[in-house]
Length: 130
Image (cartoon, rainbow, N blue to C red; front, side, top):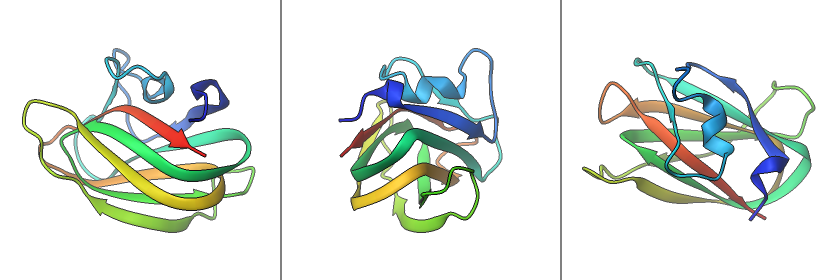
């Protein structure tokens, strides 16, 4: 597991001051980032340096479809698609999904939520395994 201090959220498509995007990488599933409605919603996580990633775990609520992209550049452009996932609806508790990246190198990971089970979704934690 990569220490959350090594990664930070550098871009998010929406924000709520009570539930900011920084909550995604604080390691605490009790805090979260919440969307402000409408899709797609996205956030980008940056690592301090190019990092080998074997898998990513996403703890969320009401996320239906997620696209994951990566890059190895220093800026947040030129992403390549890694995978797309459909998440199961879990009424009343968090969704926890592990997505394999097969040891890919990445400087940034872009998470694009294309649809949800409700108008609003929340992401409680993103864990990265190397």
